[in-house]
Image (cartoon, rainbow, N blue to C red):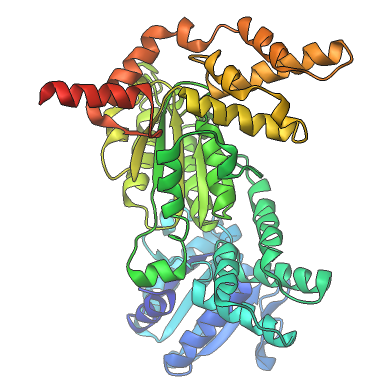
Length: 507
């Protein structure tokens, strides 16, 4: 049910007190006026603390700086006169005993009159004694059709046209912003180069970054990582590339649901976090990073409130990628924390949202220790897929060396023996390969020359890979993946060969 349909239903049912939490004051008042027109052309009275009632010459300024007088004005109008009274920022006065009592009295009398009081506020702040008489109605952010109409209006002002695909990408990028913010960023784009361009998506992402900066729960994580910057992981890359257009309007018309997310499980330093950054960059979506530790606060009930705020913020900025790094550390040992069940309630709220969310928030969670994750997290329906990211094969190590060396020494790449480097670094993770190259650069720099293949091999000989220091944990992860509980991120790996051997032995 849309906002207009729900609001008009409440008007017909004579709900006396309606509470609409929204930052979009101008837009919601326009929607209220439109609904009032549909419901018998009702009169609209708007009040705020500074100017009192305005819009009607006979009542201009009435109730100025007096919220109780603003409510008394409602009783003075004829009982049979249909009207809607919009009270801006009235949540600030609900704790006043006289205001609260007056509202409860009006809730009784207005049931038999075609009048409704609408409180418009940027936040929900309802005292317990008014919870039974106030009805909260959510006012959603602009939908795709409304955003497209606004963009087309700007295109008409500049006498230009835009390809359907580029327009669709602009619309998708604007989702999660208020109409006022959309107008500002479009006006900024036109002021910059005189027209709207497909690359204005970057300006829109910057506007979303401004929204994120106002919170202390999520971080807007800028990224320029391409999928091609990831060495190996071909199965995972293919899976992601097939879903590149799944957030478009064309995908909705085809009947595709929004992708839900990924759980990447594996050894540290194998590219799980890098993959999260590459997904956001490839799909042109904002990347939001959640530090789960920020959800837990000292006051009773505050952690649950922060979790709901995080969900609302992520959904408001959808479509987006929500990156939760090392989720296993956040929710491990919940029963032993002794925090009066706060961790369990936060976890319950979070996994329920994962299963039931309908907004285009693509969740990428990474985990190193699968044993610490609660079983509920691994159940089908939370994520689209669970991928195991193991140690790179020799071919994948070649690709990783090539990616880094092409970035560091693009003009002398052919002078490095990449085949030998890949062969001499068994059990090295991607992060360990990168650190080896850094160490080799230090060797060359200290001797006033460029680093060579031999420098890289010397640096590698001094590295003890995690695969040797954490053999038991890695063996457990490999056995867990080999049992078929996760999809392999690499097409060809020692683990893939092992699974094939198990299948042949069972035959």
